[in-house]
Image (tube, rainbow, N blue to C red; front, side, top):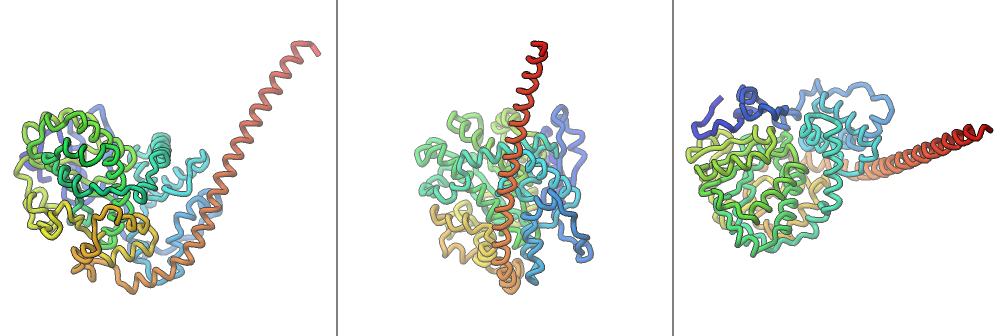
Length: 462
């Protein structure tokens, strides 16, 4: 495996340029000792489209709780019978790994029995991310997943894209340069931050830490619900993680004042606990002596699996980036040939397949991203003129055909009614489970009272 000279020895590099490869560095790294954790291949490697022979339907499953719980999440598969086009659904949903699917079926049953299977956020991919996060330990994954649901409700995550009007967006970008810009060679969205140029004092004047964190959550939701699906359609394969670049030129201990530390810790906690397994790899570039000292403190807050995805590079990083990113998707300040001059710079453009009107139209028709996309006007990030540019030239070859899209629309009406009925059934089952648990508790209490009464009668010699 290629290893750049600037890569620090204490950084684990677990994957090469191929998808799903592991290196011997993972086994021999001193840093992993005492903090052993399974390092899984890229999450997309579970969703490789199978040949038609492998897709032949098997015998019908026997009725029971498992099939009943899985049925709402297989609506798209059942709708294949209603239309000729399968491409859009297959790309967005992906083909499930049989071993993982069995584990997720069992995990979903556990959540149902304990009353944690709500009507939302229990799809295959979400549950898989939390299982992978906890090395498929059901008990730990359940606790983490339940905390995730509780956080979403208490923090009002579903309402943030609608309610947060982040008018200070442009000003925040100036004092905290960051943004999504294009895709890597596999099709994953690229996220970039220029940490060395962050002016924390100007940032807290332009907005509050609380508002910035909410804005960060809204961006995470947009990535899950819009960027990943858009990239999937364009790449014609399931995309579920990002390639990130952190430019730390000039960063040292002085950059991390108390407000900066608070912001960093809030974002780190949210990303680690509530959006696991969404990072494919992170390139930290322009790392000097100042950052190296800081890194020794920062890495204590990262788990072994996250560290395994990190590449720390000095100033000679370009060849490493070009292995996974084409120059057209790399900003000029990182050695690429893109400037996005029409938008005031690459980090202001939000360039990517999610800006392609044809792709967005397909996604809106599936009702997967319509809500998040419509609220984008609150921020004024992407004008209609901006959506008309970018990746239109490749839309004919990269995206699914308009005919397939129209055929898919025919299935939507039938699917919506079916989905509503299944959701109603699911809610009724959850309510029934709660009533059963309450009845069990009452019976246990009655039994305890009768036992005490029997003891008293025996004591009286009756």
